[in-house]
Length: 260
Image (cartoon, rainbow, N blue to C red; front, side):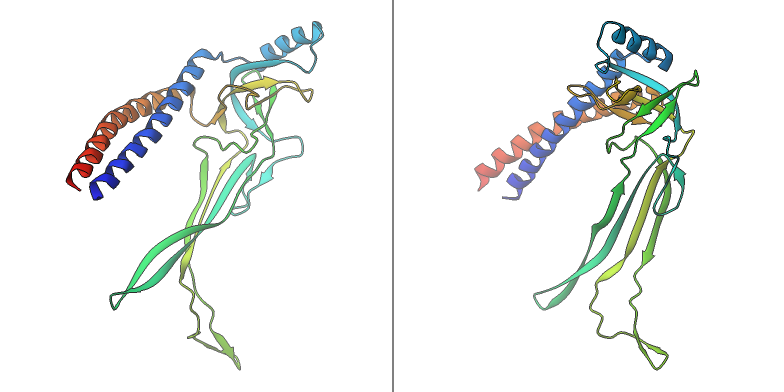
């Protein structure tokens, strides 16, 4: 039975790996096929679209590079570290123990759960190398490799009973909480960005965001060359994993069925 379970897990892993492999290849091809355009050239293309009566209908999938810039309302302030930024994300995890009794023994197992998380949805801008701004609509998309500004663990200290000014230990506290893990990531103004997406003028000014139909949307603090290298390596390793896991999984399932 164990062989069949392991075989099924390997096949599931191979399926997930195949999906990730295809996605990595698709992103790589999208980056290779997309032009990196300066914002002034995008403005010229948009003007040509306006001239033929298609105002508000301009669409162009491409890449833009430049520095992150705050939205007109100003910078955001992250929740945990109070860092001025254009984007942030935080997560709070509770680490706890579960106690169970089995065969006369008391066993503890450690677990964790996310008790709070948030990703900023506010738009920001990118200033290209010509000094021209273009809006960025993240729509909840987390950037690749943002700066981590918080990574700490705080042990849980249950409060005892205060009796006439004397703090007594709380012997009735049945909490199994070990502590809380806090993490936070930000994009600061001025941070260099590479963005692959679709430029449009639906709201007037040019904005780059997720394509309405097919296409990829990538916001990264890495360069295009670094991303291409990463996707190539990822595709290679996933290919090896799928080619190994799939046949081994099938063999284990067949052997397990024969030996039952």
